[in-house]
Length: 175
Picture 1 (spheres, rainbow, N blue to C red):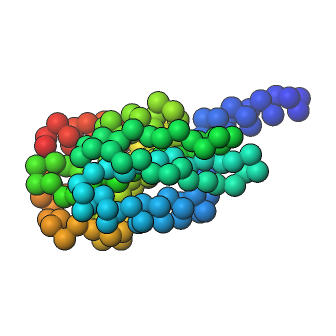
Picture 2: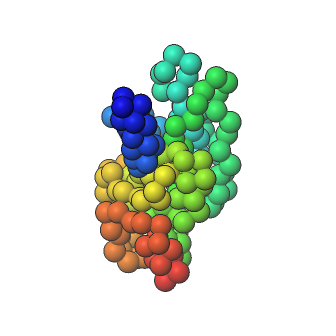
């Protein structure tokens, strides 16, 4: 009988959506993105990296990789580290680019690995991606992180507090 309950518990735990592992992970992602924002905006380049747990269970951050205007190749995790989340910036504000929300590709990348994802935008937004469900949630709104002074609020339309992958697909088809 105990095995039946244990099996049910494990199944429910595995089916649970990916969430920030802890307040510590969320704060680490926010601090990391805050530190990268100014250079990302100034150079109009994405910066990206991974957050992992080392063999002692401590959260560690990879060195950030410098990407292009719209892409960034995640670096390898430090040796002996299990990746739990990704992070990246969205560069500078661009009038014809909807970079105030995570892209469909951002979400699919995290879903492929089943990891959480964190994104900062030119308007200073801070987003969380659930890598299991594809749901995207706004942690904090405009100007909560360093922001591009050229940012024009609402240029790509209103920004919701959360999106499903399908909602992001529809939004990006419009823009």
